[in-house]
Length: 273
Length: 332
Image 1 (cartoon, rainbow over the protein chains, first blue to last red):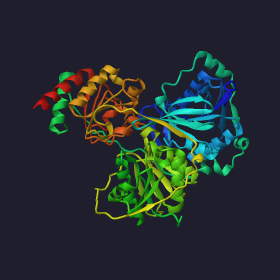
Image 2: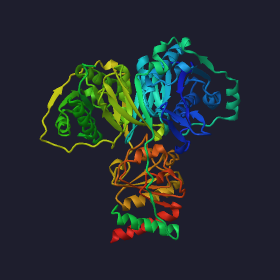
Image 3: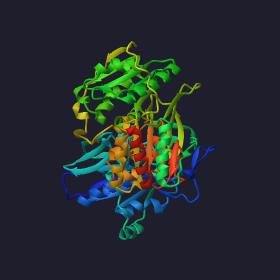
Image 4: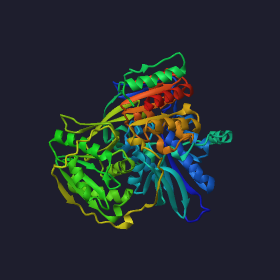
């Protein structure tokens, strides 16, 4: 990446998930299969932190020549969902779309993605969301980096590229750290990056014309015992919904102001301040 | 697995002291070690950490491994990975616990992949399976809409633990333990990343994570003006202000005040949630609060579920009257 005229190759990994913004009541667990069953009308989306990762790639492309390849793994991925990064401005979409890829854990997913990235072969930067909104693990990015032997920086809110390096602002509890990493590197992105851009009409039209490249397990030379369910290192013993008891005592009044004053009275009675 | 034995905690220090989560991890680790009838050890990694070993022992460790090097002064992924890889390969613990902190979040997954083992992130409950002696790791998933229990048969079983979900043991300075130095030889070339700068974004007043009273604001607050009212109330109650994601994303309040899954985990005596709907992601950060009081105009808002007291109404009208009554009481 020493030559600024040569396009930088960026790979962004995105996951299709059940819309995490759906009302909590619409999430139901099927105890027999240990699976989450989305309620009626709940749609699928790109996991929000992954959209921030796409945005981070686009911000780099705003400043210098870059080719953005989006990579997603699943089975029967919905084209209207996984094409969103293309309509935001990404250039290419590769889907690892096969039943054999599904129901994996961080291990089998990171392995399959790393093998696909090896096949893509030319990359300067790999971006992932800090964690997916379904399992909230936040392991796949670091796993890919470890498998590929790349440096990794997690929970980034800003990425600047220069001199073959990335300068990353990494969010920590009481502020942020500025970390420099050589490229190629893997960076995971957090929402503190700022709002991801909306697709434009032009972007949507362009995305329509881009046909995703679909790779099956054989296309990326994976060991079938290492992907999907077969490749899991962890076992899901149980999935359940903790009971949240609704025991809220509602405080009223003749007016909202009176209710406010009554609440203060109640808190004093309960010795809460 | 016969060779993997013992429970190990990765301690963290801040300003020359063990952090709160470290004491919580030691409390949890002690319980697991007792259930396994094995030892509890603590690992301290840094440039000058040996002096904290007695504290780790006072909070429950039988043994402390101190890994000191100038290159370990600040957390850096590659350096800590090397250090922990070395400690694990020598000591072979069955269970390794870390905090779900800036360090644990970054280190645990990468270490698990390096060791060909597994990690479960952000656990809120840990137990030993009485039959298999494996670690049962419970973590919230789907933004907190469900909990999953994971286990694995690769060792060490690594888990990161959410702050304020485990109880520390009372500090016992009379406890005895052993301190062992572990030397790690670094080839600086293996540390690929470089920490250039640390930028502190602190907010004046009581620290959000330590406050006894927290006043939180959400989407319904509508802007920075509203947050000024929350700040006044927090000041009155000697508490701190926090926020939910929409309020931070809109820039009404700094990101460091985010309460939730990816932000601060709070457990105050009193949490007053104002115009916060109560998404599962937000509840992940505040459900350990002893008493939640919610003010929201939507009677169906999710925040009322964990709340002890609630007022259904427009916060713009409810809050000033509430605050002035409190001021009156405090004036005596």
